[in-house]
Length: 119
Image 1: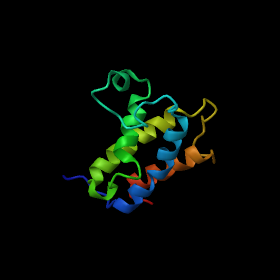
Image 2 (image 1 turned 45 degrees about the vertical axis):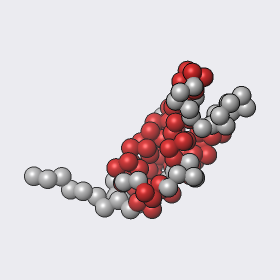
Image 3 (image 1 turned 60 degrees about the vertical axis):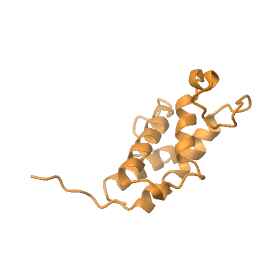
């Protein structure tokens, strides 16, 4: 039996990128970045930088990238990376996330609802 595929709207997915984009950029220490947050895979400094994952994500998903050209699966994959990032930055007092009304938890619930096809 085939699984039921939710009809996920690409526009809804793309709108969800604004929040993590802002959060990731705010958290990055870019003052000393020689590439202005453009990941350079041939530069040793980029390869060993502790912000490599965040930088790569931003490079693949910032406002300059045509997200509408990506497939729904690619968008979902990139959103899940952002979910992991936001989730890992929540402080321990977020034990009851369903009740929490901070913007991080609200965004995480919005992503879940969108991916479940309920948004």
